[in-house]
Image (tube, helix red, strand yellow):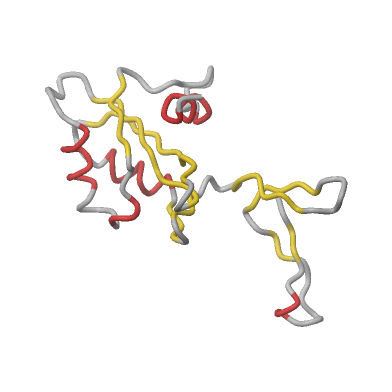
Length: 140
């Protein structure tokens, strides 16, 4: 995690821990690698994947959802989602799920892509494997 001392806070201010993951290269340059809280920064707006996931799962047809960021040249990153439906949910389109989620989310929080999957990838402990979801949705 990146810790900074901001001069604008005054000389008495100590170190402030951010939620940014960073490294310093051999020349002393700081490189921001990502965020520890998985937040997606879309054009200056902070989107918490957990909030988007919760809104998607509020739909009774959704068994589970996972939300990750996709790099975007103009906005920095945009949210994308994978959704697993409940058995017997019947036919449902990504557009229908997004329309329902739009009643709980701001427009900038809505995923730019929502993919319905047979099952969400999981780790051996049963948690959703966000790295596998990211690879699925970002084509890596």
